Length: 115
Image (cartoon, rainbow, N blue to C red; front, top):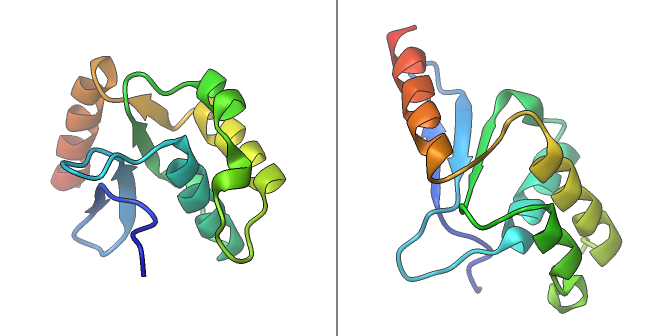
């Protein structure tokens, strides 16, 4: 089975996931994988607003528009809903980009660890 995405998840001492990033070495995730993960969480009734979604510095809502959603052939997921998910996550308050936001995210990680 091919990889659908890559990156890191951040889990607190209480076992709760509080962040996901898409930084990877060899595999280069796109906004497509971001949208897929975001929608996967939604379908399971998980609270996506409590997570920090950390994407590449260059990713933006424009990438949602430019992405070829028809090439993502994942059973049960359609191009329209993935595009909507992409826009929702990249416009949401918990969206961060690697770079400037990375400092804020590291500060957030530290505060979570101290709780």
